[in-house]
Image (tube, rainbow, N blue to C red; front, side, top):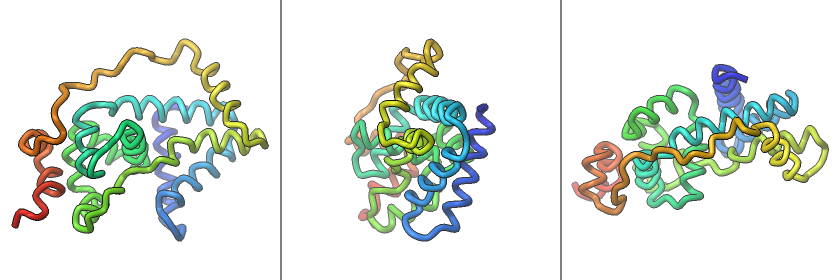
Length: 195
């Protein structure tokens, strides 16, 4: 699977989820698991590899700061969910945010979350496990260790164990620092009561 195929799956699942009722995040995950389970184990492993590469590419302080503002805080686990949720937004939003995370201030879900005082926009924990769920369905069992064992074997020496360059660290609790680095997001989430 190449990156184009990966993004085609994401966009198709976004379309499928848009026509479903209920929670949009869960509808996306259901569509993704269904689509992956209709392929092969090999395709699921390739999907996971692309997902992991995209997920790792945005493991940066500036992206974490964006998640911190949007989520009203952002632990290590929450940052995993934020990056996964950003991937589910599709290639355009992912690429734009990867270039400049402050652009997320223009995302409709982020704007709505700021207005409503909601701290869940763009966070999607379950999508982190979609490939393992699809793999379990193909295997006909509920043992996710099979997926992770097979994925480790699949990746072999192709897995990059070098730590990512996260860029310059800064204090997420320093409002002036957040305004300087992410001015539009800071205005949305830090200045909401300053009128």
